[in-house]
Length: 467
Image 1: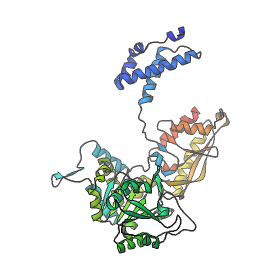
Image 2: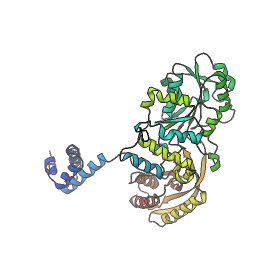
Image 3: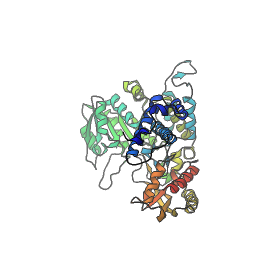
Image 4: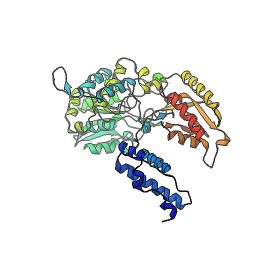
């Protein structure tokens, strides 16, 4: 060991410092000792490379930073400046203020999750949203599980286990994260029978495939892709009519699912849950955290006899949701009942936001940013926001973007300054996620939530100074 390395304090010596003792109180003895050892090891390596011996205060500060870095929460709030409204990687749909309040109310104490207050006896968690769902979509009944894939799995397991389920070949899709309809079906114990071709399926294809072992007909909405050109598909109402003639239940997997008509806001029409129910689908499955704008959940609506059967299935307990999800979902559904979805649910507030509003905000931001040192240009450019989240593939909304370009003095090394700027923002507190195009960092005001504007501007100014 070199003489210089011997001048470093020992672990025990550092443990006697008041600042370190405070860290132990905040974290744990083992965590702090590990951080000190890592700090001393790093100091020894730097000394071997010719660096001076750090003083004790510097080592204490480094150990504190190591502990805080190692044990800070990894799940954190993020500012989404990308313009992707339902961003799967950023947690999908933000919750409304009412949904957040509802979650807090039931999480901070006890609740009547499974207790009937009027009868004074055990109740069911399904009761908190079932009537709301039935009222909103015109179904006989409804229930909630932890996501849409779970809803499809439960429906198939309950209705068609050991039987064949007929689906159009072009609908045997991958629904994200590597999960595929054939895999979900296999796990349910049902056997997939695909009919037609990738691009064209006719009603007679279903009819010809029905046999003694057929348990259900399945339709899957292509919510995350689109086939165009020489195509043919079977209308849900026609499939349901066939199901009734042959005594077979029809399950409709809508994927995202919407309670509002997206065409009203300049988008393609996304099949609505109400339309599925009125077309005669026996069960309709859809997500809670996409176009509905609520928490992650799989929602199943349809015939009461089938819903009751699903509730009794052993998988229902394994797939059930907790009190916080139910509270957030109930509050979200109440926005629809009151006709206030576009003014209270963040996803719909973003979708319905007028372009002139976005342009005014973008112009104000650009004017502020353009005056900062290090900024070569901050301008407003036309762009497109994306709905995202496996919804409305290829559909966009016109928006206005703030394009930020930095001066040449900010260009150090081979990496473009805007790339460093974007990374600095991602590593900030809170993290801000942007996108880069044509050597400019782009900010889309559409996905900046109310109350985040000041944080965005402050963090951006600090990040530009640091680049």
